[in-house]
Length: 493
Ligand code: SAH
Ligand code: SF4
Ligand code: F3S
Image (cartoon, rainbow, N blue to C red; front, side):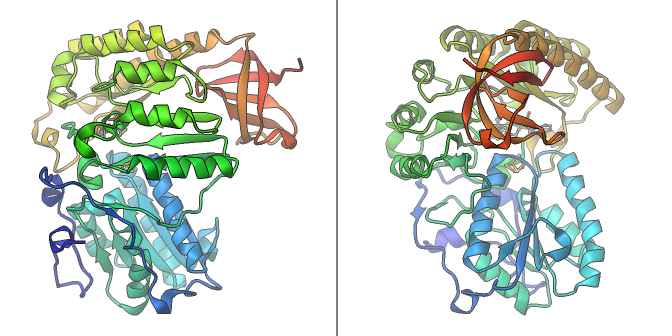
């Protein structure tokens, strides 16, 4: 790594390893430089090679699929060091909280958990407690942990995961909290170990970071510059997963459409990647998230060819008001979104489309909310994740004075959810009596006699069946539909 790339804001007060985060540095984008693909920066110090033997690790993951996949990488590193996984904090020798910063509710959960873990740590001083993930990238969070949660042993950022062996070593050796958070990173670290959480479905990163800077969103700061993995690395990973018998992969990026923009002048984009993955013998391919911006006709054409491309598009709209969309920095208007939405519905057979919506953006008027409500009615999404706007310090929207009372925002959310549920139920109704293909992933969380799995459209189906069906793709007849799930029975011929 060049010196420029490793430049960090180092604060000496808290011990030699203190590298503080800076949202201001995280905002910087070095347009002049391509990301470096680094294949040799992961190393295990000699005295850490078997450091985990006889010890157990526990990771709690908050937030999105990116974080889930980072957890798999950290699990891989722990296991390489000899640690064994545990599901119980009480028997863990090391606990990591892999955090999410996207809304205050996510952050509050983590602070709550840190409070609980204080007692465990007090009874077991040898326990190592670490905080990683997106919250670690925020200086305010790090300051709060330093002030109020002295029982934390280490904090490290989203760009420092490959340094886990060194950080654990430092934490064992140091009395002070070990903090290492790089803010201005823009590289891709390949060849990290991974222990995948399942043997049926797998995440495959295609891009890291985000350059969209929607005005409400913290992710471009916590995840850094948008950078694409090389096609050959992605395709080799998918091939390997296919050979290992995985049934489904999900290509991951904050905005998968912009895949490749930073490689070789953007000649090989997401549509090319999809086309290449379509040829690999993996039964199901999904991707998330696609921004309505740069969702090309070529992408639609490839997905509509079917094969292993699953007919589901998650297309976050965020708001139905063009004025709010402009303030959010979303780059499209209500009309442009609707045009794209209709094009996808028309061209991809049996597609399901889901979305994300934020209500109560600063100063959102009742009329502007009505525009969101009418868009939801018009689109009749298959499903939607709905959120009340949460102010994220350091983002442009945080500077806006907000005149909408929280009670009003809650009311809007309720109104919206009723519309979302109504539409989802209507869409699900189309499947009643139909025979659908379900990839059975396991027992239902609520009832062990019931199995669950997903259809190509990503609809969750529950049905009665024996454990031997887990891992199979089979035909299920839909006998009842609900807002978010379908009930079915195994179809015999
Ligand atoms: N990259 C994805 C979104 C990732 S975050 C995309 O652009 O679509 C997932 C969702 O969280 C977003 O789509 C948005 O609806 C929501 N979100 C992000 N920041 C938020 C905030 N400050 N307050 C409330 N919801 C937010
Ligand atoms: Fe956040 Fe927007 Fe980037 Fe999505 S595209 S991660 S909402 S800044
Ligand atoms: Fe949360 Fe970070 Fe994902 S903020 S949503 S875990 S990228």
